[in-house]
Image (cartoon, rainbow, N blue to C red; front, side, top):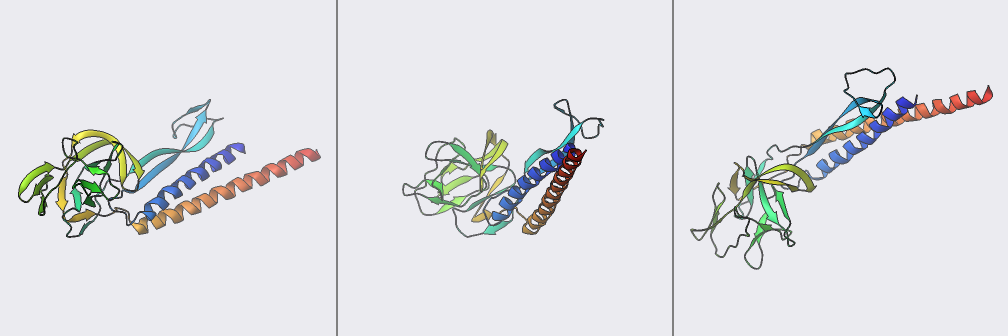
Length: 240
């Protein structure tokens, strides 16, 4: 009986986690450069404190539903043409490298950039966009053209090259911001006057929310059923 309660409880916890992830995806459907997240879960038997494979049967094993795979979906988002020369998108793999005021580096696909008062290329939160030498990019001039390779031309003069980084061990920090290990230059191309939109499909996420809610409610009902059974059993034992 308690085995069943344990499975139902872990299942409810996982469905709650799934609801958090799907809800966050849906909340960022209009966030530039956002990448949706997902996770998978499986039912595992546990024997003597060790998690064993799902396809192995044990006579006295407990069981649990467990979080097995958190995944960031890096599929390409749709492009939106803006006509702003400082709006950049990446076609293919890679991330823009940015650096905050404390010198911490992050990665993003949100190429909605601007110039600060000193002429540095920055995000709208003030983080500096870095070039291939991991240096800040200063732009002094009027006509700005950026090639697919990231070369920055100001008044027809090459001044820098925007870095499109290949990143491993990627972790979601917030919205369109990621942390990870810089593995050099990626093969992605820079597209000027364009922004990459979120790759979230709102219909898919709504279906995910409905499914997760139903599964969560089912787990709660199972827990309640086992709880009622335990109370009746205790009452019956007390009468004997």
